[in-house]
Length: 153
Image 1 (cartoon, rainbow, N blue to C red):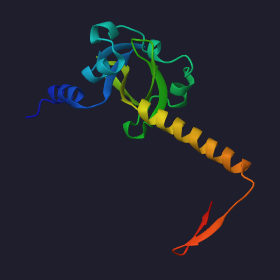
Image 2 (image 1 turned 120 degrees about the vertical axis):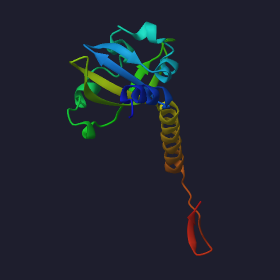
Image 3 (image 1 turned 135 degrees about the vertical axis):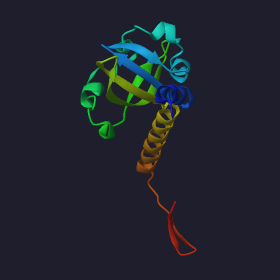
């Protein structure tokens, strides 16, 4: 017989994502990866309001836009900035569902660090803007035909 409680705990410790449970707006469980991501220990987070980790620039609307789902299959992931223990903002992708915790409604969440991806997207956008600006200043264009392809220089 499978011990589902032990299996759930083992999975939460194994995954490379932050996993947490929030009850009445406060953390009641965080896995080791969530500790590593945020820089806070489980003891520091337990009992703390989960909203204190949300970057002020993100605001609460991100969570209201994606309310907790009673249908576990329809919980949509969304992005926001979280503040780690050092005060540094980091982009995360979060998915939440409603659960029952000790007979009361609670939230089970998972977060993945997407900070590097967001910075690369910003760099790419800047590069595209710079390229477009450079091309708009160009007064001469050279067309060449090589190996059956038209090239603009």
